[in-house]
Length: 383
Image (cartoon, rainbow, N blue to C red; front, top):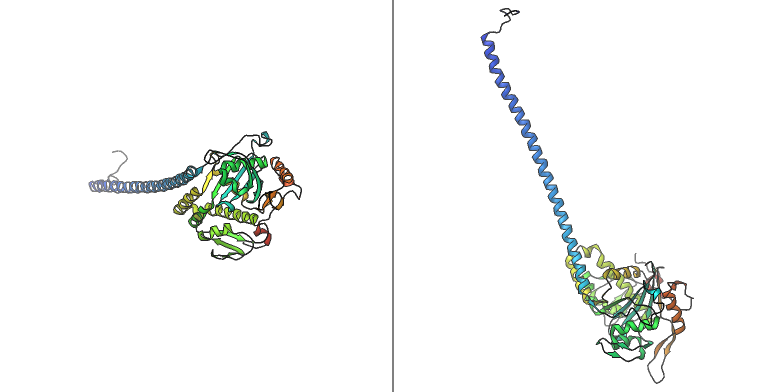
């Protein structure tokens, strides 16, 4: 061949050696490629498994959250359906003053049922924007004119005059609502009744309810001996604590303050993480609450929560706590030997008109005396 000398031409041995080297290189190159390909495939498989694991964990968490949400929504639906409903409201009638002005008013009649003389009746009015509340306490021994009503057995009752505490026993919740509307002119659109005898079970379900006492509380025979300051009320102490009459001052009003503080703390404890995160505890509480509560057909748990949230701190500037104005604290009707508190019609009319007009905070100083929540008045620090 031109350009090649014999010295340049490869020998047969050289050609054979080269032909043997090429397959080896090809085999080595193929193994390297296969090894690299296997490594990449293994990496992709590992990443896929990790992605699947993450997706599984996320899916499991989402499913768990949904399950918990369904459980608590179910509980709320259960208590909303389980509470007793009483069709006792009378949203129209000649006794309602300035009915058009009150169409959007939020007026709650709160009734604590505890056996006649110890019953508690409170009227709570929420301002139009929901930022303020006026709370009026009606003493059980206040002397009132009770109108003719349709009683609890749907039978008509005759009008009479007597103690405020007798109205429910005589005519039931519907008569209580009508009596308050006739007395005040306010349109009651929420009725909330609480059976105090069911509260010990609620308290035990929550593991106790913390309160802040402005002064020591004790009563012989009821194992109630609590020092001033922070305390935890257990189920056994609940009824003696709520029923305890304070010796000095307006006993009924102080009992109302104590009950309001207790209810606010009860709500706080029921919504706390330690309760919500414990299905057994929460279910026990919900069942006990459902057994103790009566609402009108249209009042929801949300309405109730809004009210209690606002009343949580009775000593705050957003809550005005008043007693129904009294003209004579020791009134004895003609022909009777029983002493009552006689309501002041003139100051009462002024008070109720101011509530309807959402201007109760501008009341003249002597129209009704605001009461102060005991813990805030004493300077006791509950931290």
